[in-house]
Structure formats: structure tokens, C-alpha cells
Image (cartoon, rainbow, N blue to C red; front, side, top):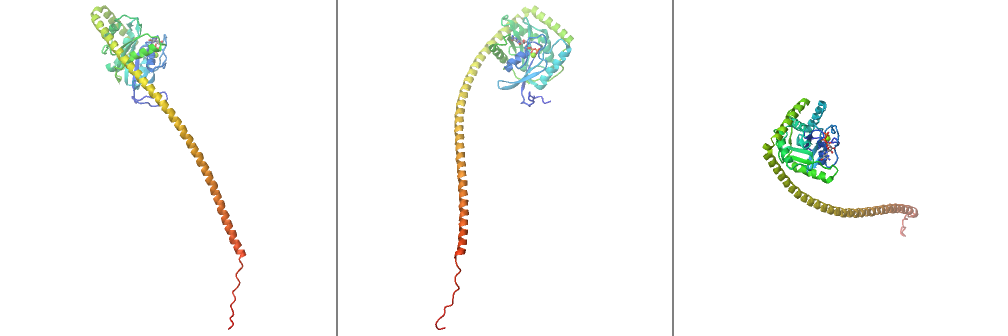
Length: 358
Ligand SMILES: Nc1nc2c(ncn2[C@@H]2O[C@H](COP(=O)(O)OP(=O)(O)OP(=O)(O)O)[C@@H](O)[C@H]2O)c(=O)[nH]1
Ligand SMILES: [Mg+2]
């Protein structure tokens, strides 16, 4: 298979491009976030007791002038092993179509707590595809807007402990508020928050090193271990207090910096928009003038064509007249010759003159 290329809905081979592979368990909001990137309701997402996305879908988008294929993939962990196996194949499909990708792993939460199942899913896919620090974005989705002021800091520390072998820091974790999905401003703000983390990323190659291992009983063991680790971190709050405070401080600082960057970016986007609108206006005026000139030229060309046609017809008439005159002249000449031949008597025979002396 040609890994770098992909066929679109019309079976056309499109140019080589990067993927945005959104992973996570069922119901964490993958399809919803994919739509935020795409900018429209491209993928089905709904409040449902069973999984919604059942097969891998994708859409082509442009992010900062770069073409990306956004994948909407089923969540990994479900109740039946059969479905987990199907879901693994759907995840493999996305990686084989776009090995060069940015991976966005979405975590859900229960009352702010990171779900053990999500950690197990992360570790299982990470073991198979070895996520790279430069191309990994971690998202905690659907958080209440009002949450403890140290939530981000403590969750960072927790994730650093749970996602072993993975770099977890302020630059690759994104905490997203539960927004009103119909509010366009909130959606835009959410997209900007995601893009803040995105701009720090570079797509990298992902190749399968092993199968995604998730047997239901292994899952149970894994979740038990994670529960214990969470409880331990909770119990040793004091030990982690400094780390959490530092994490939160750096996180807040990063957010303030990003906010300033976004504001200046927005100003430059506004300026660009204004320039573009002016250009568009100039272009429309020029286009209008050009259309008028074109109409004028067309009218003149039609006139010239009509004049030429008239001249051609006149020329034909003249030629016809010339031919008729020539025929008449020839006829007259022939008549003249005939008349000449009739009217002129043959000269009398010359008599010899007699002289008197003969
Ligand atoms: N109000 C609100 N709803 C959200 C938000 N994020 C996700 N949701 C909703 O949560 C529900 C589940 O989201 P989906 O995007 O379908 O979840 P998924 O991860 O794609 O789930 P599967 O397709 O089953 O794997 C949907 O109803 C989403 O609209 C949010 O920020 N605000
Ligand atoms: Mg979905």
C-alpha cells in the first residue's frame, strides 16, 4: 500500500499530507472535537448509551496552510471483546493511511477524575504505535467551567504518573471546558485553545510495533492498578503539593502567554481580513471594468464582422456584375465578328488594265 497517499470520496488520489488522528474511548467527545477542527458538523456525535462512531471516517482540512486529514475513529474500549477487536482495526486503518500524523488523545472524566479506562486505552495504543512527544496532544474534555484553581496542576501531575514513558507538560496538554455546542463563539474559543497546543506540534511517523493489546481481563487488571496509583497520589497529596502548585503556576503562565499570542494573532488576522476585503473590492471593480471593456470589444468585433459581411456581399455582387459584363462583352464581340463576316462583300476580282499600245 502507498502509505503517503489516500483516496478521497471521489476515489481521486490526493496529494501527500499529514493526519490528525483523534483517539480515545467511546463518548469522550472525539467526533465533536473533530467537527470543531473541520468547522462543520461533518461527523455524527451524540449523547448516547452506546458507541456512535463505528467505522473510521475522514475529512480533508487546512490548518495554517497545511493540508491535514482529520480522522474520526471509534473509541477503543467497549464491553465486548469482539467490538474492541473491530475498533483496533479501525485505529490501525487510520495509522496505515496517514503514518505521518499528529495524535490527539482525548480523556473524559468523572467528576474531574481521569477515567482508568482512558489510561488503559492510552497505554495500549501507545505500546503499539509509540507516540512521539513532538506529535502528541493530550486533551481532557468536557470540564466544568467552574473548577478548583489547582485542577490543571494536579491533573498534570496525575497524568505524568499514569502515562509512563510519555512526556506530559503544559505544552502538550489541553484542558477543555464543557461548552454549549450550539454557541459559535464558544466553539471558536475551543478551537483556538486546541490550536494553541497544536502549533507547538510537528507531525511524526507512526509505525505499528505490536498489536494493540486489550483483552477484557487485562483491562480489569490495568484499571485496578491505576485506581491504586490514583489513591496513592491522593493519599500523598502533601508530597505532590509542591509539584502541583508549580505545575499550576507554569500552566497559568503558559495560558497567559498564549492569550497574548492569540490576541496579537487575532489582530493580525483582522488586518489580513481587512487587506483581503480591500483587495477583493479592487478586484471586483477591476473585474467590472474589464467586463465592460470586454462587452465593448465584443460589440465592436460584432460590428466589424457585420461590416466585413456587408463588404463581402457587395464584393460578390460586383464580381457577379463583372462576370455578367464580361459575358456581355464576349457576346457582343462574337456578334460583331458575325456581322462583320456577313456585311463585308468579297472584293471584286481585279481586272488587268489594258494599255493602248497593246
Ligand atoms: N455540551 C457539550 N457536549 C459535548 C462536548 N464535548 C462533547 N460533547 C457531547 O458528548 C457526546 C459524545 O461525544 P462524541 O463526539 O459523540 O463522542 P465520541 O468520542 O466520538 O464517541 P464514539 O463515537 O462513541 O466513540 C456528544 O453528544 C457530544 O456533543 C462539550 O464540550 N460540550
Ligand atoms: Mg464518535
